[in-house]
Image 1 (cartoon, helix red, strand yellow):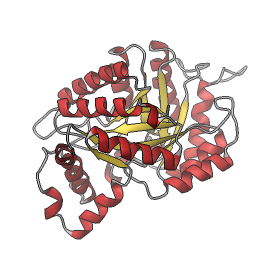
Image 2 (cartoon, one colour):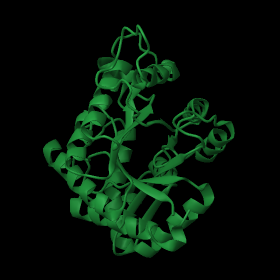
Image 3 (cartoon, one colour):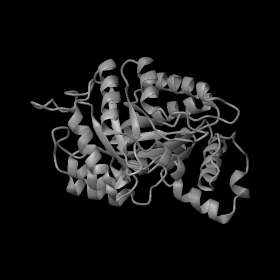
Length: 333
């Protein structure tokens, strides 16, 4: 069976608050743990009115403290925003508090607009193209201390926190393959290079101390409900939010809007058609067919399911349907 996990942006709904979003994230994680999801990852985004997980390591601690077995991690930490030493200390702390349950996914995007990225950078000379070197530096802080080593991450040193490379292009695939790390591709919003990236990663993978064979995790949107019509309506919240974001006006997650796609201009329709290529929107039967086709096409080791819905109860139900579908024998990987 293909393993399945959760990617949570801790959505802040229109008229809601970050506090409620973070409570919802913990509630969803507790359900996901019971339903057999392997991991619960939170994503780093900044200056986004609709995303409450900016302080990602803090939210990971919140979720890990309220669960007991599910792995909790970052999907991901945008490393150009941070000193590798600080991230090693944060995730060393998390691993010390919740041993054997913490994952560290790393990306090189800023997770924000340019002005916010400048405000976040540890210095103005920080260069996203130095990402591979930053990853190696971070990995070094988790290694056992060498004699005479002057800088150590405490907590962190000697802890085996699993590191993942995230990507939406061939660059991340190359880094993950060269370093022998698991690779998570952002096919849930940037599917264009998915198949090329998978092929390149698997072909060039070099075994490492952490991983002896390639491991691919793919993002996938699921908007599941009891009927196709209800699922299509519920998915319009995410569609509105994404069009707003790409139009330069990020918003809180809006309520569903009947007939939303009918009022969109052609360029917005084309944008959503591209973004939602790796998606299942519908009843359990419709979701099962879409997931089966995607798994057959890509042969992932793991799927990371993401669902953004305005109503928390509906969102939890969508993940419940996804878990039931993914645990069925016909979707074994």
